[in-house]
Length: 289
Image (tube, rainbow, N blue to C red; front, side):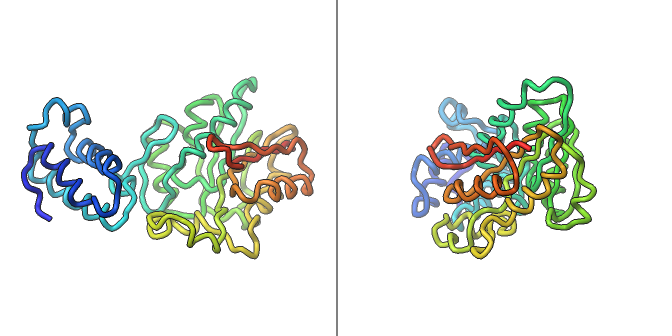
């Protein structure tokens, strides 16, 4: 698996030969471009305009290990140690889920509906992971006070680092949202948002291998016997933590949109609405207190 030379065009071709059995060529070229930029500082334009440019020995070693990781299916974002969300570059580790485009749509929905609210108000993000939702909302709604909760100490370390890098003040709490003592100390807010675990255990076999083998299962899966577990817990919590007129936002399992809406209606929420993502899949639910 020796890299033929330290020229960037040779390195890009080497990526193709090494990864051809697992990925499509355009996907490989994208991986090569991202890795060359992250580990050697060369842009995609350099690959076209300065193909004879060379990388240093230490950078070659990083590229070698990157390809090794990619060959075994490790997601590119974990290889790079970063992901992109709502125009932000965020640190990611295996302690957190890789932020997804559909979650950007959830953030945009909140901005569209809450952006015109006068004065400052509070937002609580439950299950913050990398902090992507909380940080993006603070960036776009700077007058807001943003709070974020996660059960994972490792995830909160990542989220805190991201908040600092992005220049955002987020109030973080470590704890399980199902714990009454944790619930008691959460603030009352105008907005509560959550992208909780919602993939059923029985769906593991239908998911991409790079997800099931590398991303944290505690942030992904719920038991089939209690598929709406976190929606029920958070929905009940928000009855006491949402201020009058406040709104609860969820990202949901596309197969459980109707069930989630019925649950929230049974809990006493009004104006319960189901929204689709850009692919036309049921992906978001909003409800008023």
